[in-house]
Image (cartoon, rainbow, N blue to C red; front, side):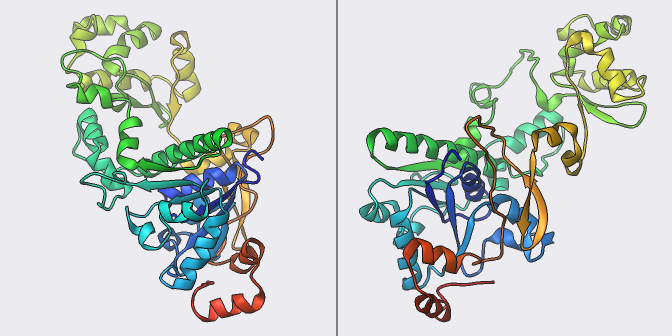
Length: 393
């Protein structure tokens, strides 16, 4: 696999860090996940397969599961020894916490000068907000996503159902780690990577530059996904059309031979439909109800080369023809239960990609991994378990 031979020490929890290291595991890295005695918070989720939460399993498939008490000096020593052997270390503590544990970048690089060390935080390693706690819903609120959605939809502020900020920063962190590994390959030099959720949310929003430059003003943009039309067809199916309906309605009317209905309303150009989003969507809805199925409506719009998306349940995706053909899901062992998880968005001509092992209970790999990586014997491992340094669920 692409990253075979690369060892990643994963000190992250919940979503932002684990989704980053899951990507590295999918690419073939040996990811050693370290959990505290209380376990990763995501383990508390439901539903579960056996004793493992499915949300945790998705983010941690393909990793080795260790649980080490970092409040114990012996535990900190074990993890420091693992860090000395790693190619990459990823942590998502607040700034300064890893250093207080003796596992900060400066401490780790003393024993491992070429380490690629990645820190994921809410607002970065420095600045007045550096020590603030950051979770995805907080970032959605503070980085404009909730405000933008509410304004574009004309609704009160609503929470997001998906942790966009976590997954976005995880993807950016994985990209940065891969770039740092290439740099190390060329120069032999490791480095510290500082990735913030706040700056990720700025980069991952196509409207950031528009908004900080004063917004749309009186200009008419055809690109307004927050205003896109959701329409119900005759059979009850909902479909999503892309674009700003107050500009696209003219093309749609031409394709459906409905231009006379626009003329009757005095709508001749996008300027005449501005401020009339509700009326435009109502008219589009009346047209959609004349089509019995998605395929009928799609065929009617074919001359526009306009795609549309049927509103579907995420749970149904596993049975989609494209997902089956692409092997988008892979079955893994989750505490003895076969579970399907997303495989990977990547495909490589040079070899396979995706998790090569399952997801297990806390401390599942304590003994086997520490025997292999640190050459610890059974007597030493027994003592570490008795002292509460190693935890197994």
